[in-house]
Length: 308
Image 1: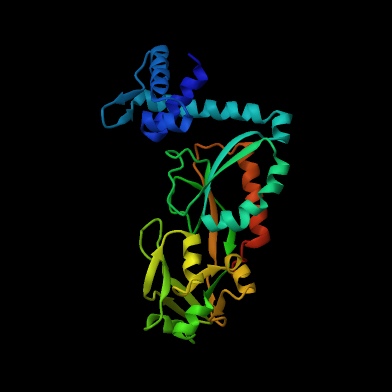
Image 2: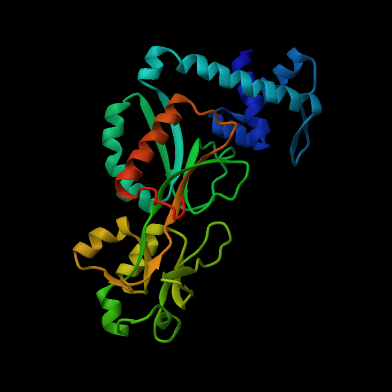
């Protein structure tokens, strides 16, 4: 029995709550993971997990061993990455999940420079706006817009997206240009709805002008839960959009979008990079975080807070 593999298998089973999920994230067969945990229990002479056909629960001894095992695995990772060669050139695989427009328009175009800097680091990038189970999906970190509401995650504020209101010329020719945000609440205007990954409900938008604040919901013919689909709907003239400036910029230059309500402002959308406390901030994760901060600083820097 390889004690490191067995310890890693046990930790993953505890974190995912399933031998099947643990096997998937470790790229092992379920049989191998099961055997490793059984061999670990035999070596320790204690029962670490209670298994039923429906669930896997950690025992009291297993919970105590899990805490120590996590620390051992973290220390081992530290020992490997603290070597000068590893520190200078982090290596290995990093799994991340980011919103689709951020990947397509900012991170992927900037990736060649990152790869040139760290050629031995492999990034596996999930591109989605869905909620991600960092442990169950074996993801090292996620980038998401809006405040991180999961207290179990460590989140770093990496940027602020400045927002504007836009519509396609085809929409404005068909419906006429609204002169006030509240016009969007009345017929025949339509917005493109964006569905929250947390609640499944439409996200409203609040515009401000001086002391005035207006929440605009509007009616929609189409609602989506993906940023690229949201932009495509706006470009097709389906309705009015609320877009980050970086997404709107190229389409403004080509005349594919027209800005609306330029004397009104929207609160910026904070962007956070989040990871699980049990996922140690290794050198490879640290350099990825630092690179994301660099990219965001160039395109969507953290806004100064009033009164700060």
